[in-house]
Each structure stands twice: as C-alpha cells, then as structure tokens.
Length: 361
Image (cartoon, rainbow, N blue to C red):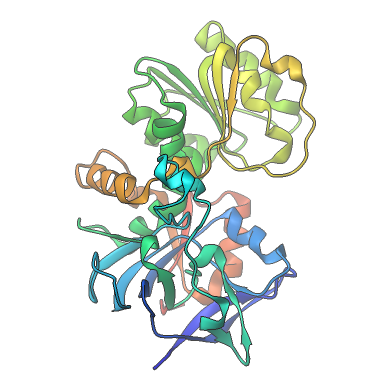
C-alpha cells in the first residue's frame, strides 16, 4: 500500500508547487522516512532550473516508518538524518575511502514516485521537501542523541560540507590562520570546523554586517566587511595579509558566486591551501599567476563525507556542546512558504532556514 505525501514539486523550468505525490512502499534495501525537517539552501533553488520534474530538497531528518527487506541498521520509529552523497560501499571510490564520490550511487527508481499519472525524480535521490521520502538504506543515518529535527536536518549538507572541508579535506593544522569567504550556513560551518581544528586566527569576510556578527558568535576572531565593487576580493585580501603577515594558511570560498571561484587563491600565502567549498560549476577565467608560488587549490565534494563515520562524530560534538547547530536555524517555515524561505535566503537574512512539514502558517 503506497503513501500519499505532500511534496514540493518543480517542473524544472523555474516553477514549483505544493502537490500530492504517491510514494510506493519500500522494497529491498529501501527505507520510508516521515520527514520532520528539511533544510533550505542555494542548491535547492538551483534545482528548479535542471529541466526535469522532481521532488525538491536534499537536507532532511525524520522518523523511519517502514523498512524494506534486508534493512537492519534502523527500524520503524527510529530518528534519522539523511545523506545525499549516497555510497554503494563497493565501487572503486568507496573501497578507497572516497564515499562522497561513489561511482555507483544507490537510487530509488523514478517509477516509485508518481504525481498524477507521471513518475518523477527525487532531488539527489532524497526529495526531502515533503512529508515522506523513500530512500536507499545507505542514505539513512541513525540519530542517537537528543537533537531537534531542524538541527539534525542541516547536518545533512551545509554543516557537513563546511566542517568536512576543514577537517577531512584541507586538514587544517593547529595554530594556523584561516580566511572564510562568505558566512552563510556553509561558511559558519567552516568557521566551526576551524575552531574544532584549533586554528589560531579565523578571518571572516562578507558584505553583510549581520552575517559578520554571526561569524563572531560562531568563532571568527577577525572580520572584514567586503564590498561588491572589490573585484576578486583583492582589497579584502590585502587586509588579510595585513592581519596575518603574509597571507592566510588556508582560505575557503563559501559564497556560491562564480566570479569568486579563484578568490581564495588571493587570500593565501605562498604554499597555502585554497578550498572551493560552494561548488562553483560555471566556466570562469582564472589568472594562473594566482597559483604562485606552490599554492594548492582543492575542490572537495560534500566535505569528503563518509556518512556512517562523520555524522556520528558531528552528533557527538553537538551533544558535547562543541558545535552550534540550534543557533544556525534562524527561522522555520511550513512547506507552503518555500518561496518566502528562498527570498530570505537570497537576502542573507537567515543563517539557515528550515521547512517543517505540516507546520502552522
């Protein structure tokens, strides 16, 4: 017997609406999750232009309702969070510890979701902007600490991406200097990762003074207010050099602005590490002189997430009050108010907005 769910469905041409979706019962290796919270991020906004019908959303937490045959690590009633870079565990990349770039990601076929008489895709094989999600078991991580569902949901992408880029990918060293370009949800997570790594100096760069104040609250030791007229953030880079003496040891780009894809290279010293966190995918010109000398530029996906290793660590840090998650959830919205959540996101009002299915308006 299938489940009738409410879900945000996009036509792939810039439009979306709240609709009724029929979600099939889980088959072998699948889990049906009742979604209690779904994060809102720039990738969700971008997904509306991917030219395919899909259930939106890729950050989610909720409660297991049904398990298919062979699922043993969770059972109905368990609280869980979802992971969008779903590892198969058996491909070349997974066997080499690079689960975030799995070559054979498990999926649930489109035919298992129907809106009217047509099948549709679930965004990132999750589709969390809904009352229910049907996902592969590898996407489901048990939550074994007391944590509100909105705080658990944002772990599933933004927090993992930022924190993991510091700890897993760049491997920031104790006593080092770090520049963070953009202090939205991902940038704040980079800052928290740098605090965890015991960086000596954490310099937050943003055009929004309210976000710079947030950055201070999350662990930034210094802030620089940039301007839109500062092309490539070269003026801000001079301020970073004045603070550090030669440039930051590490710089993280978290703006999602394509023109700033090479900006972290301007911020780091010779031999420093520049990290592209926000996932710029457009073609942009790069001055190769920015790599002089011996600078390293890395582009990790999803903070090199290993879901069954990293999420328990993050949950434990939350339980120990060593990372802030509740404080990142600035506002919650019902599914019906996704347009407003997107508007607030674009205006930089929220650190993180979260949708709550069935929440009152």
